[in-house]
Image (cartoon, rainbow, N blue to C red; front, top):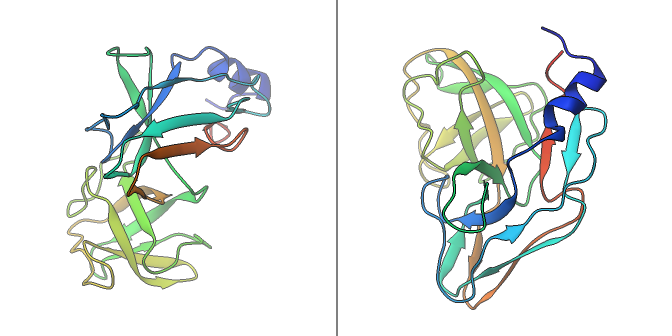
Length: 198
């Protein structure tokens, strides 16, 4: 069912994404220690099918942590995880995985070799076998409209054993040798986008 702009804005006007924190992996292990605490999200009004944070988020991170993704929850502590977002990048897209070549075709995807990406299955589909929801991959074999994924930087392409659709998200892991802050800027730190609905 296609949605009007009003429908899209209404869809994301009420959200249980009330607090942001950080994961050391893809949505399983929340970081901890030091002065780490989830931060309250202030959302701007939905507009044109998107909604962004209207205030900078500063998440304190303990020394020795590598942060892979930003998590969103419905509470300051405990509560329920609502999912996770990539950090340091706006590159995301959908592609078609081909088992015979272990490639993902996606027009003008914008990825470069050594970029880090995680994948998921678009709504209503199943992730092609050979790919994992919990693995952070390296991009290899990047061309303008296709790329491959590897478990190591510059390594062999992952063996994709079934054709199918793949959603991908580029993230830039942040390593904290000393305690510091993960900064999510205003309007681009967190973006909820439902423009694909219609």
